[in-house]
Image (cartoon, rainbow, N blue to C red; front, side):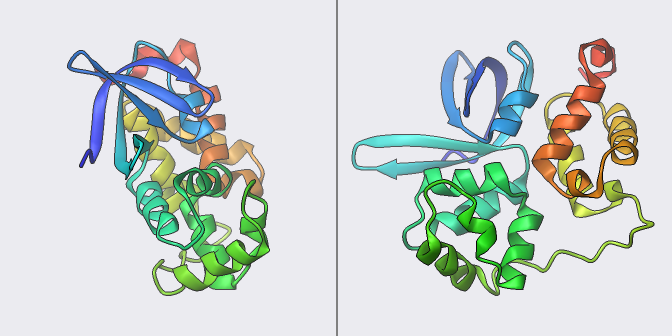
Length: 206
């Protein structure tokens, strides 16, 4: 079992990363948000799972542990393969998945390519009781103090940014974006990375 990988990014394109670990390049299937956040030549740490099939060995990786855990729950649902599970996490954050399940909102999963009405309902039924209800967030509380902000911060530090620089950029981003954007881990991660920008690279932890 490959539970994590840490190494230099060789390729970052589409929904695929290639990470050099000790001279071996591992192809990792991941979310477009993490690919966009990754820069060739930089060191990256990802949480991974190896999916074994008769004709293939495929590694799926994520910036946060929460994403990996939700992915593993999704692939355990009848009719949901690894690609569909990855598709869900490309559209919804772990908190959004949990919220949809607790609301019994199968429409949230029907937005994902390849997931039809029956499978969407089965996801809700199968995951009920397996995901903690997302904590209610007071409108006056900063998003960075909640699980969404924590997930983004963990992804940024995993990409090599120092916690101080990442937290400052995250807080600035939260103040500047809409509530809808601040409630999505992939969107918030992308916007925070855009704010950090190449000019901020000196703030990375080495």
